[in-house]
Image (cartoon, rainbow, N blue to C red; front, top):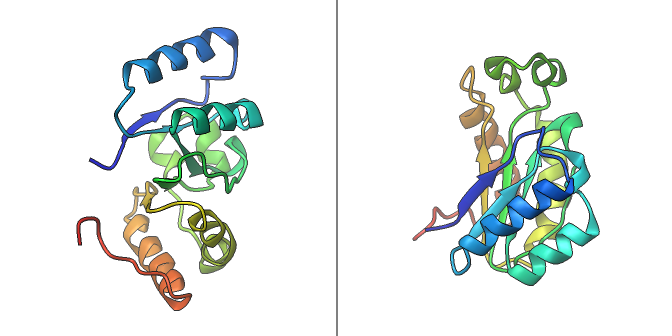
Length: 163
């Protein structure tokens, strides 16, 4: 198993009740590989990153446009976990799931990830997983192919897990 993903909604902000809930959840999963994805920017905080490092919990770095800042933080040297949801600001504000994930990344948008963010993160992580969740009109496979080509052109090995 790569990791259990805990994906928290945009309304899950960093208030005491939510911090306690997450702490109990992580305590219940001790010993298992865990990645946590925040969608509220209040979690982009050094104290959160340090707490995850202490627990060896992977911070899932989502690409969500305005909802969450773009990060290159590695909290677990065993795994980086990146999820591309799309940058459809109007879709995210609509509350309509179909519109939220209806986004086609340009090669230039992915270039930033392949030339800077991902290489920086892989310096301190043993392995990584990248997921595209912008699937409404089958954009995810096309965008993944673009990113793979960009990474391979920089010398990255893109072997599927277990090979």
